[in-house]
Amino acid sequence: MPKGSELGAFRTPSFTTESLVAPTEGGRQVDAVVVASRGFLGTVFIILMFITILIYGMWVATGVATEKSSRVMELMISAASPRQLLVGKVVGIGGAGLTQYVAIAVPVMLVLAFQDQIAGAILGAGQAGLPTGGLTIGLIAAYGVFFLLGFALFALIYAAVGSFVSRPDDLQTLSLPLSLIAMAGYLSALLVLLGGGTGTLARIVSLVPPFSPFAMLARLMVSDVHPLEVALSVVILLVTIGAVAVVTVRIYATGVLLYGQRPGFRQFIAAARRAD
Image (cartoon, rainbow, N blue to C red):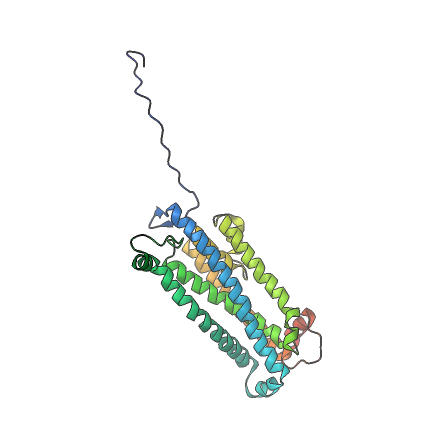
């Protein structure tokens, strides 16, 4: 360095990087490792929600179709209102399925929550190394809320589908469109996860049923979502479930006594219009 130069000694510049889409907690940005963990957990939660809704939704539809094919429904419809039968079917069969699901999910959650302690007791000092560090009570609660709301929405529709077939074997014909809708919600949630939970499309699908249970959960996992958006998504879901329940009861009342006709969407629309 020349004598008398006012420049100091050269120092290697250092840089820090900050993500613009990472969630925040307490006003501080979440660590990158935790963000990666939540992306992994979000994918797992979305897949579990998708598979569980399809499986237990089909349970509801199969239960309705079985009662109809055995003519038990003709006796039941004279002893209870269509609304009572529909709600009982969704709550009864859906509750049995969810009980089975909870019996599996709770031990898994406990193992994940205490994985480090278990690994330390079995393997000695050290961490378990599983990517579950981003799991919090709030995220688990959000998963439970959106899972139940999503299940209620699809279970009502599956019950209406089951009322329109004469045999359980015919369920595949009408259940395919529902499976495709659930698949669309699943894929939209994966896109939200990959996009970091930001963008106009992510906000829209997280508010519009039946995609919102999947997409809003994905946004909560990987981005900072305003509480008002979460509340709005829940309210819209509740209103949608109420509107679907009204229409489903009308369809169910006609469908359970409809025999010998090929099921289709025209019959669904006609039943909703003429049923009291």
